[in-house]
Each structure stands twice: as structure tokens, then as C-alpha cells.
Length: 122
Image (tube, rainbow, N blue to C red; front, side, top):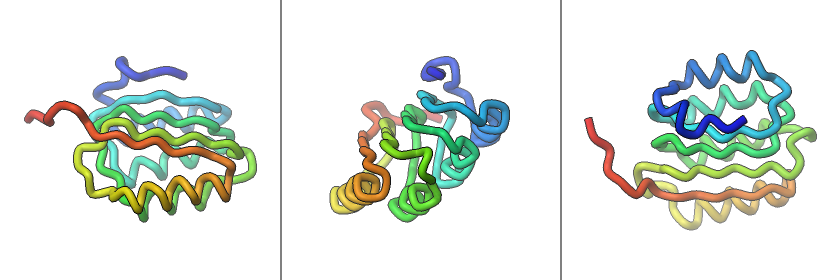
């Protein structure tokens, strides 16, 4: 399901609703208003998720991402997580490598991370 541009105003509540209504979803490409560690919890209601690309402005922590990964199951084997619009660089290169290694070892998965190119307004 590709919701990249049409979901620009989505909140964590919207993500939770989508996950509840589409529990068999395997691939999700989503943007949103602003996502953080609490949003990751909503994605756990998608037990068959194989690929998650988050294009929303976001601020995830290493602990939050690692906690999310630790709760994924066997159906998530090969899981690809892409966080592509982080608003700050608090996720160090070392933390990114730990996340990549954890995904690779636990699920044979991958991790991509990118900072937002523009500034937040508001």
C-alpha cells in the first residue's frame, strides 16, 4: 500500500486505524504529520509486514527502533525498514549500524535511514 503523498497529515491514530483495518498488509509506504517511537507500536498490529517505508518527518530513538524490531515475528523475515525523513541526527552512525546488524541477524532484514532535506515550518 503506497500512501506516501496522500497521507501527509496522518497521525499515529491514523496509522493505528490502518493497521487495525488491514492486518494482512505486507508492504507500507507512508508519510504523515510527525512520527516518533509511539508510532512504531501501531505498526506491530501488522504481523505480516515485510517492508515499511516512513516518509513522515520523524524523530525515532535507537531504543524505540530496537524495541520495535525485537517484537517482530517469524512472518517478518526479510523485513526492510526505511526511515527517510528524520528531523535530527540524534540517531548516531553507531546506533544505525547496531539497528542494521540487529535486523540482519534477527530477521535477515535491512535498515535505511535519511535526514529530512528541508526545514520544518510551523
